[in-house]
Image 1 (cartoon, rainbow, N blue to C red):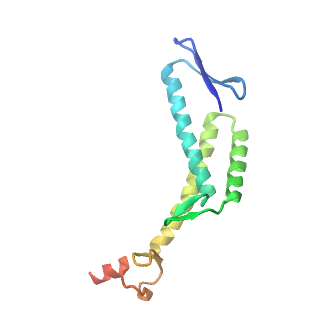
Image 2 (image 1 turned 90 degrees about the vertical axis):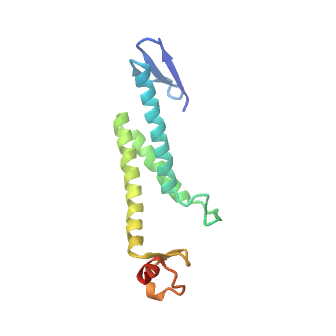
Image 3 (image 1 turned 60 degrees about the vertical axis):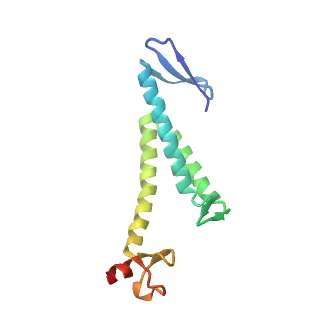
Length: 149
């Protein structure tokens, strides 16, 4: 999106969108304008995080192995969600709230996975989470070593 700043350098600062050919926001000080722009940058970052989480794995490397499979279904779901929320939001506050809620939802799913993995234990030798320390062929697990101490 192309943006221009239009100002009288005294008490009027506007963000003009070259896409919609209209003023998006008006401020009475440069400080307020900078604050708004900083918040926009923060939420752009949150949107990138949401896109990555919804389309994982999408062109990434895991354990030095390139994952070339494309999660287009995840990408499509992200763009559908983004389009829906963008159209639904009546204000920047509603838009930002929708982004925060989606990110929290996605990270909440990650926390659930992490807590499930915490019920297991990490096996250094296997490089993965194991369910039963007594079945570990390497006897090198964090929990096994803790038992021995």
